[in-house]
Length: 369
Image (cartoon, rainbow, N blue to C red; front, side, top):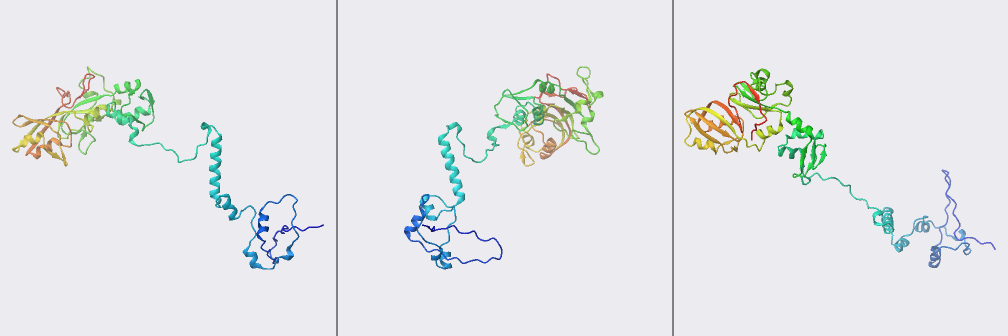
């Protein structure tokens, strides 16, 4: 006996443009028993009762109200019973997490997958330490510029480890050592003491005036018989460590050594500088006391100084700072005019008998502090 399947396969829609569409009758809404039976999987070879397309009413509205289900997409009721979400993206995320959890439960701890997280970035706060070059300069090992040069050449060791990367931060209490090559190079750096005459500028040349460095040469070396001979290569890196006005004379220091430059002109320098100053005018009633302490320049108070009379027209100044034309401006504030100024000492190094316009090397047994 021949049987007809209740839900025969539907023919594929035509792909030919301009073909006629046949209005097929919509299927009758099956009873609840039939709907439940249809959701249950059929056993292989199970046959349905007799029925066909002839019994479907020709009603387009019934077809629109009950559209055919797409293959592979469960109904909302089925999804609700399964507890899943209909959002495909959320399904993908849940499947990934559950798979990772199930895999991690079956693997040893050291082989479990690490869930992804934000990328790790190195900290650059000052809590990690201070720049190596700054620590070296603060300890007086060399200047910051020289520290960078030594680091680049691999001549610096921190706690026994070589450091060759600029910008490295270290513990402020770390142990720093220099390679023998660095110490040898530092020993070869020279410091020159010049007795500057009036009319020479201590730094860059100005119109109508020569720089004081022009006085340094083999023909003006005072200690040529007892010290090394001057070589023009020593001009490299040689710079004044401090200033002395055009109208002033006395001891002026040039050095290649950043340690000495920082010692003399650094922000925290406390090296004394002594001057003999010839003045004229009428000193204010409390002028001498103000010269020692109490004056302001450039909206900042001056450090305490030591000022005393030598004779009727000369004062001795001992300062621990060096602002531009400081002594001349201090004297003007108390009614005096400077007519002559000579620097005779910087720290422990004195001008002594060095002739005007000549220079000598700072010896190994001399130091400013």
